[in-house]
Image 1: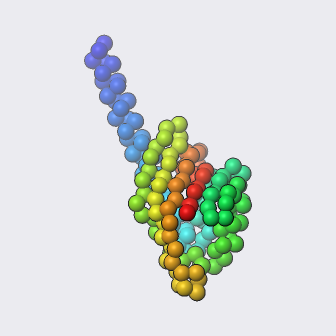
Image 2: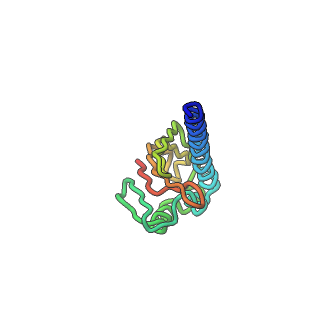
Image 3: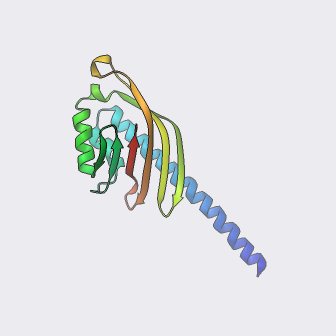
Length: 144
């Protein structure tokens, strides 16, 4: 009986570790896909990584924005052209699985663009993601 229990615990531990690694890989894939969309000038594509919910939250210099549509509208207003969007990279990504289908991501963002388009900028972000039926989605974004 003890051997069977020990084997079951070992299998459960291995499966949990495998599932966590898959979740982290999927989260990194979602973020990489959002960068591809951003860098080709597609704000709407970039926003596919966000939960299409009125509860989606964005916190930045301008304050708190609530709702996927409002966050999208703000991005479209702030970055109306591919030139204004420039090219973005994420570095120093840390993904922490929080359990119950949630994860936290910390990283740096760097935006390269011509001086006429506003020049280079960058900062730090934290994201809270939720695992949904359509995959991992950003439910809160704090970017500075």
